[in-house]
Image 1 (spheres, rainbow, N blue to C red):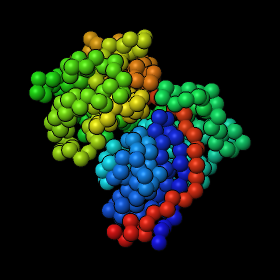
Image 2 (image 1 turned 180 degrees about the vertical axis):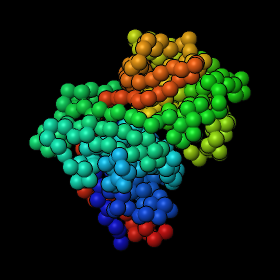
Image 3 (image 1 turned 45 degrees about the horizontal axis):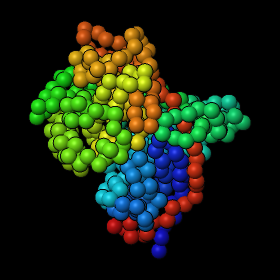
Image 4 (image 1 turned 90 degrees about the vertical axis):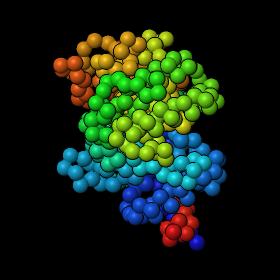
Length: 361
């Protein structure tokens, strides 16, 4: 016997995956984990027995529900499903998948569409961040075609504007959870930050790479990953995250000087493979790092003066810009909000079939 679960399948930014109504899924966390593993086919490099995409950026899940929060319209609960490992991590969030939350919520009937454009207020329940998404809805229908282009996605689509608030210290309790703008682990200088996503950030040159390598070149450099993982485990401990051996947070960022007129060059790791472009949450954290007095990016990045500042991050597929509303007070950085432009597209909708055994355990 199999159990049918309704879903919408969207590309959100440079990621994609199923978007579920949370009410259609088990409320028990263990049962939920089994269902998501079965639905996406986790535990096989090709996700051959599920609808996963055999890569971290295509093995993501969004679960949506009407919000009880006084501010928000919809709750967004994110899950990172493993590829070769049969596991699910509920600790992080994903800003690219977030790009599809507004359209999916409208498609599911969780949020009514307005004429012209619809503003959907989203509570990211994994982190507590608040995000306003602006979606084009002519005639009360989500519009997917348009002229907005984002690096890492072919063609163009309708823009989805994301305005992020309350993103600082949501996981670790502070922007700088170790209390320092820069510190040293095993001879490598690092900045450990929690802005939208907890990250360990270093200069690429300090780890023996240029920071301009392609994703494939970096993924083949297993010595680099072994070195980064050892640093990440200690960084996670210092950031108050405990043993992060089985967790995808903190993520890893490597920085280099810009080469194409941007603010900084970056490579983002998820953390056991290089992102093909750039995570939305990672972009915010890296952008904040370029503005941080005394941080690892100081003297390397070339941020513009004044606030708001457009921080352009060069990555393997092009660049992403984060518009940062910030202030520096007494040598400390305060992030008020961040805005990014993304796109999304509905790819499919229907039912995914899950073995009853996944529900029973």
